[in-house]
Length: 271
Image (cartoon, rainbow, N blue to C red; front, side, top):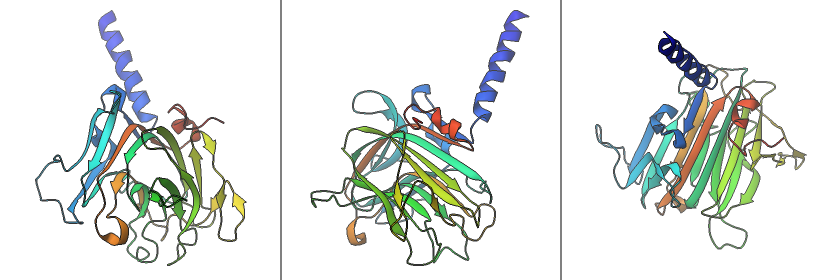
């Protein structure tokens, strides 16, 4: 009887912990990345991945270890391969909601315009004007030496040609960082916020003003499931001529509806 009760309590605790978040991945717990959502893969120079073919040495997103032996999802794409990312909350996002996405990650190799997090638009009536309302991507460093500067590019107006870099930070390859993205999907009161290594980042709006809450419409069209987050690696290099090989390691991911949710990943929110 005691054994049965203990089992029931353990199951209840597990269910409660799982239900606490919309999405949760913890490499140290042995989680399979498939719990993140739908795997999206593209092969050589944007080619469709052959139907029924699994991941291979040229392109994968799988739980393994980082170079120091720490459990992590190793995301890899060889040179000229385009995409290895998970689409989270597919067909589940709604208008007038605030979504919180937190993750701890290490970048070992990236290339120009490598997307590592997207808030992607799937609304057919607005996608041409605003394909990706917000994205974390890599650009050229200030000294032109490499592409290790990560930027948050956003399109608050949801109009064609208005996407702009609102925040940037040069990173060190092989070092672990944390990110927290906050996206409110209201059509009139929407906004985005960024936490970098625990601190709420200061962004620059279209008028040049500094802000820690960038107002805008990040849910173009205003219908359910219009936009949702993706995480991993995507990109085809400078002038779309094929990217160099890219590698990153993801230790934790949480998607929730409160700041406290993503604060459960150490270092994401220090306030």
